[in-house]
Image (tube, rainbow over all chains, first blue to last red; front, side):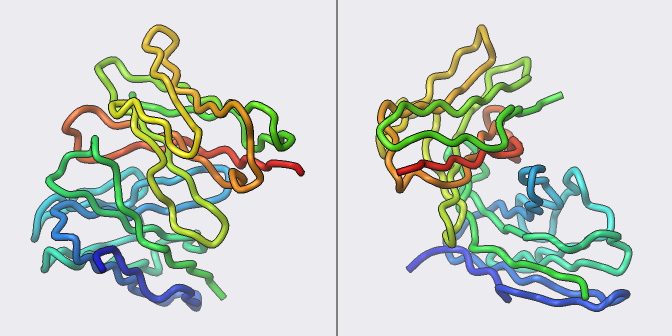
Length: 114
Length: 109
């Protein structure tokens, strides 16, 4: 059963802590993406990666970091430098780098700062 | 700059009434346009693409390049259509998709 798996579903972070959100896909997709979803603001692109060992900043990359050591995995680290990290985070992928086929999305991780 | 605008944050209509969710975009080239939908407790999923010219769940969307619009329409709303809808855009062979701010559609019985 192919798809994108995000974990954990819910994550709580203390002030000053770094946390890592997992995103794994078994679709053999080349490109992977991280978006942040906030009420009234839609989806904003954080980082994306079109091939292994390469990634680019999106529109709101400050306070976040990523790695792409394997094709299947694209973890997102929310660092203590991110001033407002409480949000719903979505991972997506696309095959062949062709966006006209649309994304496949994961089920998301809700991060809350406590 | 590329931009997608969804002017309505919330749209509420009665069951059986026509639905139109508005989407306008700004882009100088030939865009690829999409509608995504997120039902309660489900993941965000692709509803339709303009290049497919398809009707999905009774919804259609026509790309109007003159008005730079890609409104989503359905002649008779059903209660199960209640969801969050996002309009999105990418340029052909681009590496990323840009999303609008979303419209919450609520169908009243």
